[in-house]
Length: 154
Length: 145
Image 1: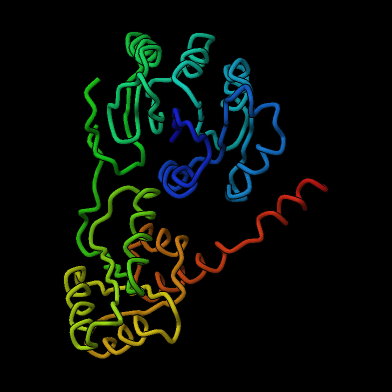
Image 2: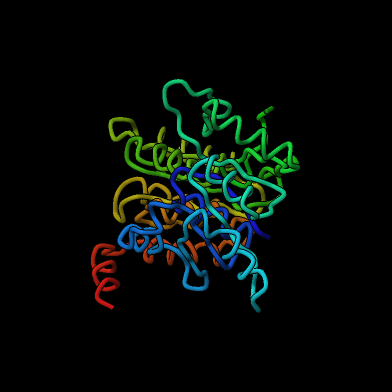
């Protein structure tokens, strides 16, 4: 299965140990403007990815083109697509990356944000982005790890 | 959508038997990565307490996670008392004991608890060994390519 996720930490233990086995994904696409230009950070993040899984780092703007290329190429299409913020996920959606479920995993707390679950705290801007996506038919899935019970009402 | 919790019948029980609060903290760390887990417990061995009392605590922990599939005891130091105490229970319990516990081992144990006990033990041992890397050297090697 394919998972589209918001996670401040992008690739980390929860992705490697739970979401990769759970989804069976063979591709991890990290969509982040800063990381797309930071080779060292990319290499650090991909060190623990199993050899059978392909990782790529792209800018948010490149996501629609990259994903349609990936989905039309031969081979296994199951992917995990990671954004670090709600705004980036919205930007990719609005520019043509079509997804139906958005997993909200880790959005760190900072002053002025509303804590909606142990791992998710939303600013007004985050809420605006999520409501926008929700109105466009995107289901919001608040789970940090696959076996989390869904307890957020948004 | 409601996510399924670990309520399947007959998973292997996991017990961390360590010096002090090491096991408890390790289990918390594993749950941060894996989410909340059932049928696993940490027992700390307090060297100031009597052996019988402590051993009873370990036995109780094993019984409370046992679901008919056996129990994996992860201990810290080969030769230490948490290990020897766990080993002394092998005769009466369906138990496997693995020493040298680290976070990759706990994560691996919690990932594959529907396996058979000997296979799970093998997998956990491998995960523990493979989790140790001179990661800085790996990165330097990669950068050279």
